[in-house]
Amino acid sequence: MKEQLIQRYSAPERINHWVVAVCFVLLAISGLAFFYPAFFWLTGVFGTPQLARIVHPFVGVVMFLAFARQFFRYWHHNLITPEDVKWMKSVKEVMKGNEVGDIGKYNGGQKGMFWLMCACMAVLLVSGLIAWRQYFAGYFPIPVVRLALLAHASAAVALIAGIIVHVYAALWVKGTIRAMVEGVVTHAWAKKHHPRWYREMTGKKS
Amino acid sequence: MALQSLDILRRSATPTATPQARTPVEVAKLIDVSTCIGCKACQVACSEWNDIREEVGSCVGVYDNPVDLTAQAWTVMRFAETEENGKLEWLIRKDGCMHCADPGCLKACPSPGAIIQYKNGIVDFHQENCIGCGYCVAGCPFNVPRLSPADNKAYKCSLCSDRVAVGQEPACVKTCPTGAIQFGSKEDMKEVASVRIADLKNRGYQNAGLYDPEGVGGTHVMYVLHHADKPELYSNLPKDPAISATVSLWKGLLKPLATLGIAAAGLFGFFHYITVGPNRPDEDHEETRK
Ligand code: SF4
Image 1 (tube, chains in turn yellow, blue):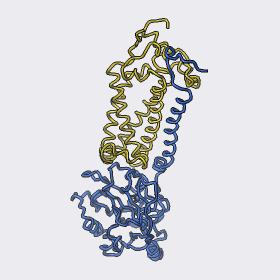
Image 2 (cartoon, rainbow over the protein chains, first blue to last red; image 1 turned 90 degrees about the vertical axis):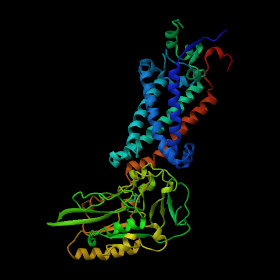
Image 3 (cartoon, chains in turn green, yellow; image 1 turned 30 degrees about the vertical axis):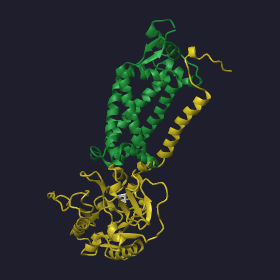
Image 4 (cartoon, each protein chain N blue to C red; image 1 turned 90 degrees about the horizontal axis):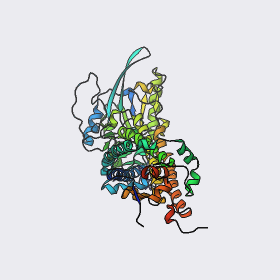
């Protein structure tokens, strides 16, 4: 039988996602290098440590802009509903592979992740600009720059941990990666993980 | 390369031990504010020896010139007028790196070997390793390091580590016409200071004292102040300088927390996968599990 597919992400959405993802990887590599002396060698990925320092904030701006585009694409899909609260409360059950609730396009975990990423990105942008020595840090009092550096590192750690969970979830739930690579998911995938979205997309009773 | 390569107490962003075979004496520069006449010979000597030239500025109505430390001006005289004991006092302080025993710049620096603290107490910037992030600026409790707009490297007073390494005193010390700047072992400098302080007390400066702030573990540039109880009078010399709690959190507690958080996320994923296994849609989930 031929596979039955549903379009989940359009080509522009996928490109947008991967722009953010590539920026994230570059930023995480250089950021971790600046944070942990033992990882300083990772700056070599950029050629020299100086180049890593120069490139990091510009990539950050690109990531922020690309993420902002995603924010306007998806925020209305990510408003938390009582169904999501139910999902979050039974996250243990979910982890065992048992679906909980009548999930729409995104489940409670994905929505939580969305808002965590939004918060981290906002903090990273503001603190990153304040700490950007070459252009902006000179306009701020030193105690403010210190706070910005602390906030930047903290938000980055939260985002990195969050992205690990995000990537793992995609690896764990088979058929998910395809949504962001080819843009499609199978009917079975949609029916199992996002039943309400499945009904909306197909008009079927499930 | 560090000049005194066997006398390194700390090296920025280097968690393992530094070469410490030698144990040189701890040195200090003593600046007696009460005998300084504000002639700026030390500024000139610094500029000469280190071969740095700040651009000629314009008069801004006070004697301060250049008005601030820059990548080309590692020491500047700061002039303050205040009224103490019913008299006008003109307090002149030679500002520059304090060569802290617990240097905030070094703590903040992410680049291995860009900041070196020698065992003799000198904190030196090695610009060839500097990446230009400016973290040292945020780390320093005295607002000393300056990024050069020309090359994006941080600069500050080196306490003439090159001169000291070959047994000479810093250029500013050598040139000071009144003997207001002295250089020697930290112990000796404390003694010189105590004699001077006793003298000042005799002459009515009840609060004369030595500025060697505890909060940064003491410094290797010390001041004799007539008003040691009010260091802020001297163009805002901080009263209790210490590495800011924000910097300590960032460079301290946050690291193990971050390691824990990131490792937890990764390990959780790994063990979840090898125990619970992948989550497949029902139709290709035919294999039976008991
Ligand atoms: S005064 Fe500032 S630049 Fe000098 S050693 Fe102390 S922290 Fe470093």
